[in-house]
Structure formats: C-alpha cells, structure tokens
Length: 139
Image (cartoon, rainbow, N blue to C red):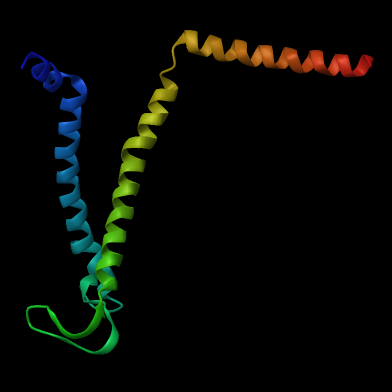
C-alpha cells in the first residue's frame, strides 16, 4: 500500500488527472462551439447540421425515422467533417493559447548563466570559423 500511495501522490499522476478533467471540459466547449457557431455558418450554404450531409454509396438508401439505414449503404461524411473541424479547432486553441505563450515565456525566462553559455558557444563557433578561414588561406 505504501508504494501505491507514493504513486498516487507523485506529481505526474495528479497533473495527468487534472489534465484529463480539463481536457474533458474543453471538449464540451469545442463541441458547443462547432454545434452553435460552425454548423450554422455551414448551414448558410446547405443543411444546418453537418451530420445531415451524407451520400448513398449503393442502391436506393432508405433511412427510418430513428436514423437507421434499412436498405443501401449510406456514407455519413458530414459527421467526419464535423469531427475534423472539432479536432482542428481544438488543436488551434491548444497551440495558440497554450503552446505558443509558454514557449515565448520560456524563451524570455532564460537565466543569465544560460545566456552566457549561449554567447560563449557562439563565440567558439565564430573563432573556429576564423581559424578555418586562416588555415585555408595559408594553404
């Protein structure tokens, strides 16, 4: 039990649990955005719901009132399009609201020792290039 308790109280497990909960809540926001904003915009050009877009692959397709296909093969490409849009919106929000600001913040937060080390590395590289140029001149 002691090992299990240590595992649960380790920071990574708690952070992962928080990330899953926040991810689930964020999924609801994205789904609502696609349903409430994207679908009506698409509805201007066609059906109000992306799930309504489908194509009959084989034979005359007959669908019951419950949405079950009784004959034919129905391809529901509107549902796939909706899922792709939800993924792209989620990825864009994560990148622009989380990844990009954190990367910028981390770049600004370099310690003086890191800045000195980078400067020294550039200086060594420059001196190596000067040495190589002098060696090729003398040959």
